[in-house]
Image (cartoon, rainbow, N blue to C red; front, side, top):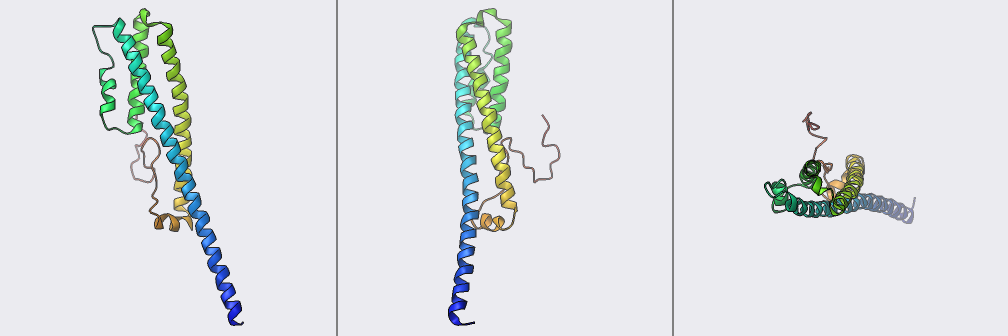
Length: 179
C-alpha cells in the first residue's frame, strides 16, 4: 500500500467521522429547538389563560363584592414559580370560577361564558403543547443516552431534561406521580 492510498483512506475515515458528528449534533439541536418552541407556546398559553382569569375575576367582583375568591391567583404573576406550578394554580382558579358561576346566576352572561370558552380553547392548546414538549424531551433524552450521540451530547453539555411536570424519571423517587 502506497503513501497516497494511506492518505486517501485516512481522509475518508476522518470525513466519515466528521459527517457522523455533524449529523448527531444536528439531531440534538433539532430536538432542543423543538423543546424550546413548545416551552414558548406553553408560556404564551399560560399568560393568555392568566389574562382570561383576571378578566373573569373583574366580572365576578362586579357581582360578588363581599369576597375576593381569586386574590391569591391574581398575585401569581408576582411570584417566581415553574410553568407546571402555574398551570396547576390556574386550573385551580378556573375550578373556583366555575363554582362561583354556579352559585351566582347573575354571572351567566355572554361575556363571562365567552371567557370560559376562551379558557377551554387555551387548555386544548396547553395540552397539545405539553404533549409535544414531553414527546420531544423523551426523544432528546433517549438520544443523549445512546452511543454515539452520548459522546456528542457530553461534548456540548447536553443533559437529561425533565418532563413538563418537572419529574425526573432517572432518580430513585418512586412516588413521582402523587397528586
